[in-house]
Image (tube, rainbow, N blue to C red; front, side):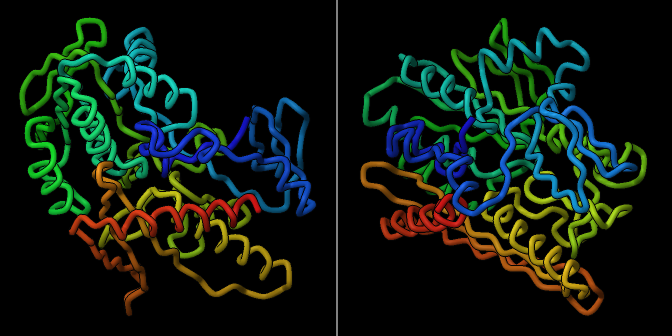
Length: 365
């Protein structure tokens, strides 16, 4: 019903910001700028007829921009066992999709009296933010300052912390040595939400509470629209197959995909970071592409950038950050340059909030 900001939600979990800070009204800004906003369920997308069928009726289009976000691939853990998947989502929500899961997770953290909290990290590519490492640090900070006898186990599919590996590792070791235990190569093999037990390639773990983050895929809308290729085509599955430079479906130049659902774009780094900053930049880029096409011109390609801030301590407030820049090389391949800022600094915090202010103003002012 309202916009709920994932990038700042980890701070909300531990009461650094309130709910009003994260939420914004879709309808007011549409009235201000004169575009039509319809909030409804999309039932079907008829690509051959260029029509979207919704619960509020059918809509014809000249161009279609899809921003489907993500869905959880619980099937990777449970196959077709919906009972296990639904129990996991209800009891131990990942809180990567706004907003009911976030409220459920926040309440469970407020009710947590102590014990082992397990966090499974989804294997790459994953939506970020909310950064799971930032989330672990802020929850650990809450445990520390409220004297909650809690222990956090981070079960990571990757072989090490990244991005900003040194920055997060120093936070784990220097700030939360007695609270956070990081376990790499913890490929999930079995999850039992009823017995509160998880089996991984790095060992078996029991827990008192958990944030169980299943693997991610492009959101349901991408599948309804037919922009996710079928398995067996030799490409990473589960994400939209787009032209890397122009972000349209490879088989339909009038259908664009932006945001987290975008699939493989480069043999150097595979996927753009699935971050709100990238989604915002891609939205601007695609809007310009369409404006150029409507004016009868062939658009030149443009590339996004990315900037992410992560708070790792609340008393005092300190953060780290990472920046990504992109260019196309002589072979036509998109290259990524990553700059990690690993040193914890109070100065990062106002930069983070200024970033959020500018993004919110861009969307809703």
